[in-house]
Length: 233
Ligand code: XBP
Ligand code: MG
Image (cartoon, rainbow, N blue to C red; front, top):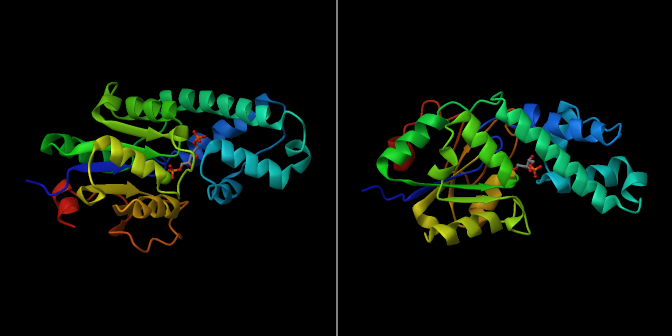
């Protein structure tokens, strides 16, 4: 019997490279739709990724780059409207099947299901984004393969706080020691570690320079890693 009972996946940057060509253009489309001249290019977006959560990222950007907009009455409502528009753009874009899963992800998920390893998600992104990605890139029924999907505002404090992983562990009814988190970023790793989890990191272009101390291993991707190797770590 495997000592490990569940794999808990992050979504953005881990299941797929969603940030540069998914979330970023969706934010930009929402800004344009609302008559704002804000454009998040690839480099700026990389810096803004330090702030997890789309609403939080918009608010941070406005406060630092467009303070007159942030000071306007109705700014909170604007952030909400921008984020709703961004989510609609993102779900549409992902639904087109343009974003592919990272190497090894589909195989690892299939192996885990075969081996009776439970699956869960712990992410900062909004729940509808998770469903859209899983169903467009994996299988139309793929969201149901994940017993617990912890996403977005179900917790008040987003990664790097441990809250989302604790929320997922509580619902899985498993101790952290029996699960493995798979992440792509320092914020995600910190969140998982603070919840007491072992964490494997698959870095990407946006995160490869980050500090991954405390990770079980840091890999380029999961293309060459079988479930048995993962469980043996
Ligand atoms: C992902 C994020 C998310 C997305 C945007 O972080 O930071 O905010 O960029 O999603 P992680 P929303 O991979 O560490 O969970 O706009 O839906 O918030
Ligand atoms: Mg991530």
